[in-house]
Length: 146
Ligand SMILES: Cc1cc2nc3c(=O)[nH]c(=O)nc-3n(C[C@H](O)[C@H](O)[C@H](O)COP(=O)(O)O)c2cc1C
Image 1: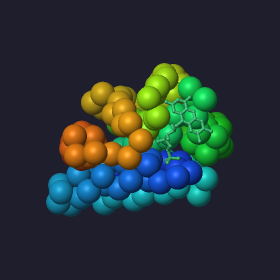
Image 2: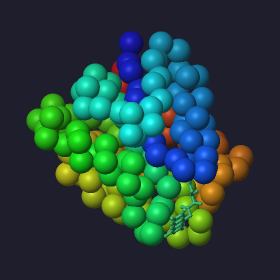
Image 3: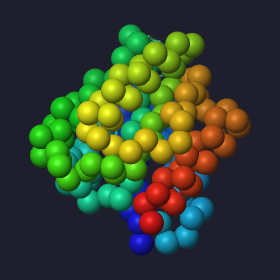
Image 4: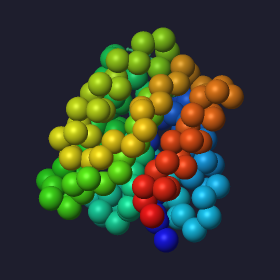
């Protein structure tokens, strides 16, 4: 059974809603365990023990939120060499920009994750179309986690 970890930071709820939409998609694939964690509460062990990971953040000042950056900062050394090619999906909420996605892509590349699908960019709270795109990414991650 594959385990999908969803790690996110959210201050006003938009990215949390996106994380939940992704989880709903992932849960449609039977036999997959889906774990959602706020980035500030997630640790290296979570990353090591999952089969695929989704990372989500709001765009704050054209960069990822400090909460997600803190997760990456704390988990980089303890996981290096053990997460190479781990399937990874990215989702970013924004207010009209979305440049933060580049910072997330760069760090995921440094971790040597294997990017699954295209990063999903969502303007503020996910609408129907964004919810569908997030659910689809969740399904892709489940397939990659098998
Ligand atoms: C401090 C701060 C900085 C922000 N900077 C940007 C930005 O540079 N570009 C952008 O498109 N949106 C920006 N936004 C808007 C947020 O990215 C957007 O509202 C996001 O969906 C908030 O997610 P959350 O509800 O999960 O916290 C900013 C919001 C805040 C609070």
